[in-house]
Length: 567
Image (cartoon, rainbow, N blue to C red; front, side, top):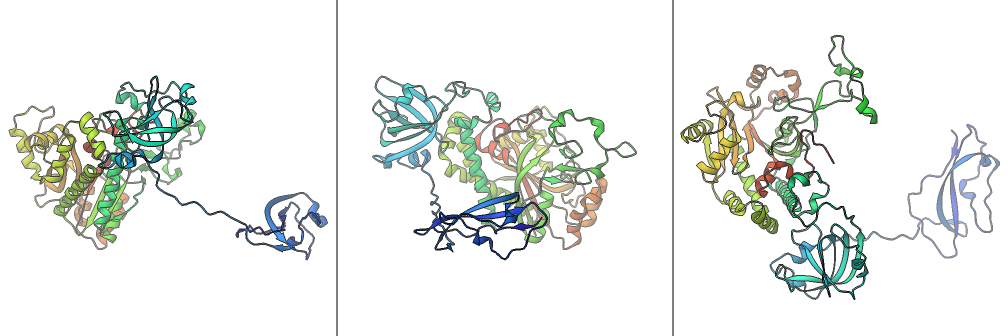
């Protein structure tokens, strides 16, 4: 298609005095041929004294894009008057106002603006109290308004209700109440967004199970806003710890063709099932099959079976053998049909990998990491931790302080089994050498046998551990370690990886795993193999451990579990 067009304007255009506005036309002729002309498109301008005149071939049907500019004495001006983007500044939040040792007394007399959501409203004869929270801290800003304040009619009209969003401006004054040291005397009140009377989170107490059905609104409660802030602090401290210690963050893939754990509990990723809005009405026989009646994966998107990853570890190892120390931090998935308070179908994993390292280095890193992030939360989330200590788990601050200050206990799996057998305690799951330790066994060891001290158990039987763990000299156990903590049980699981090619191939054969699927993983042992180790930590379990929250589904914004994929 022949065209006569202006290039898009890339420079701004500046207005000058006595200039006239013009329009440059980008013309796309619908006809295949166009008469040649020596006239520039810039000659065809319109001013009050020079109406637009186009050659005949421009009178045909055309598409036009219009750019406005200005001219003075026929000169195209290249710059237009513009305004600069304003400077971004951190906004003052309630946590900033009420934080610190003075709890806001240093702000007395200042005129401040607070934006947030109404938690409660108390109307009295001469004054009205509005509790506003903006999510920056547990405590609300108590705002006091009388009938003389601008916007008080919104109180009379019933616009200020629980759940409504507001913007209030006022002066910080000493509070007459005992719950806070300051309050805001409102001079101006603006309703930003009304709240329907059906708002489900009122002052009355509701269960966490109910709030899971309102996951889009539960962050407005004290419990879930505090969990969100502590989760954020733990994520920040995680990156900070590894970055300060020279680790490189690696983005591991979410879609994979390998099963890191060999458990087979993976979500399949496929396009063989229609992905349109009619997917619910799809016919099962529409899935392509081979002559043998099996699913024809060659017609799938990746031309072979693909899954959501259960771990970023194997991919992390590839970068550890090039960058030495790396870590992954991202979502992982497991299709385990378990409806317990300890399991999620979607969860986040932190997985560091250390090259030129053995199991001792691995345990040292895991211990230092846990103590670092817990200390960070205790020092930087004091109000939230006080809330958890008062309302969720009595003594949680002391429990976490013990983790930071005490030395961790180390023992072998064999010694742990012997300890459990000698305890004379009746467990739901019987204990014997070779069994996988259950949560009740792990919690007994760390909570009762060692009085709340974290315990690291090493050298597990190879038959209950993954294929990639290094075989010990006894031929029965592997260089694995699990870190046990009170209330949770296993928090961290790690190992020294099998760096010997022949041992790794033998282990894959022993477990009937397809070596062809791990060709790239085996290559790491062919080309410059090194001793290396790493561990995995379920981030939601860490949040659970740090907050005292009983159900792991309350530690992640939108929990995914069997039969539950709302929001």
